[in-house]
Length: 115
Image (cartoon, rainbow, N blue to C red):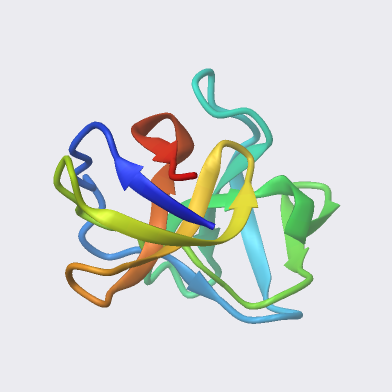
């Protein structure tokens, strides 16, 4: 499915968290008021932290085990860019941007489905 960016989006995270299946992480915060079902997590080596969807975490106290490879990379996109939607998750869309050929997350609220 293709979408047009209806509102420019710029990420505030320059170093997104990337985790692998079966990796253990520390859960710092269990939800965000704007985006439900996301946990703010830190890698055990403390090298990186970021938001990870609750649906791919098996929670064990303040820790979790990741059930699939995941990258929190967000896309910087300008209004009018066209993106191809790959996977929707908790209000975000994993996309490939036709203008830059980059792949990453964009908030669904910034997109309009093309028909």
